[in-house]
Amino acid sequence: MTKKAILLFTIVFSLLASSTLLAQKKENPFKRGAGSFEYTGYGPLSDKPVTLFYYIPTRGNIKKMKVLFSMHGAERSGLIQRGVWRNIAEEYGFIVLAPQFTHANGYKENDYQFGGISEDPKNFILKPREIWTYQIIESIFDYFKACTGSTAQTYDMFGHSAGGQFVHRFLLATPEARVDKAVAANPGNYTYPEEKGLYMASGELASPPSWPYSIKETPFATDEYLTPFFKRKLTILIGTNDTVPDRKLAETHPVFIQGINRFDRAWKFFNASQIIARKKNYAFNWSIINVPEAGHSSAQMIYGRPGVRNWRIENNERVYNNKDLTNMGAYYILFEK
Image (cartoon, rainbow, N blue to C red; front, side, top):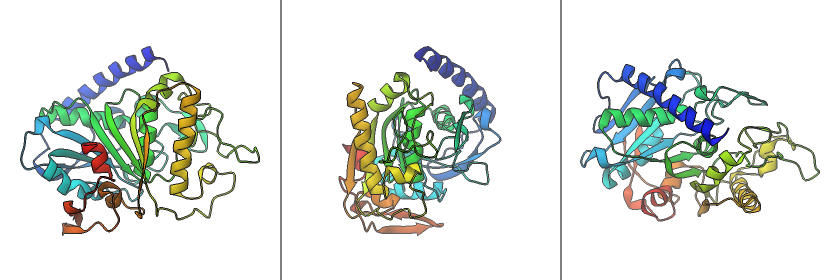
């Protein structure tokens, strides 16, 4: 897709979004504190509702606050994502938007982790761009701004596990998205920016050979996508104890080729991507950070340490103790670094 085509799509998308926003906005659903509501404001996917959990600090100027999207893992819980950020957002004055994409509403693995880009997760068949799941994020951001008068021009993103998969593929597939900083924490697998696909050491091609595990024979194997992708302020955040191996995968499966566990895959993906960027003379703004002794946990990735303590449990929502914050986690990376 050329830059002109991307610009044209952005204009068309804005017109679609504005019409659906006006249709949904009967009253402002965003109130200070914790809340949630069903979002159907993106027209092309209005038949697949998303529950939007949010937290807005009880004090401060909402219009000037930073905005964070926090993407859940395979447990499909926006409540968990809101809970891990809730105390931090209240203390440091930023807004958390945690959309929940459930199986019941039509968001299976191909529609969530892989963005709904392909008709078939095992055989790449490109779907129309306007029905990619990724488009809902920009629509929610516009809706939030329209409802609250927020002056935020960009938003940050955090995703854990399946959410980490969502985040890094979102950055690749939507160069127009208004993301500032992003953290992909403990993803289970990656889309390699490798136009030739993934191969075993023996030279045998991975199965499946293309999306969502590489950009082979996809529209993303172009400068129009790769240049902004490598320019993104993306951090791969990985717990050093996130090392449980996947034992059920065939040797030719791309996830097995990418590494024996999440920790191994994170470093292999980062190093391979850096090499590709250098060979093609792309600017490369990514980083990778280990969280010592941390495992597969959103809270440990956000606070930057194992053993994060519960502050309280309120209506089945766990919130955590801000005294456990370190300079190794996603909060520090997104808001302090």
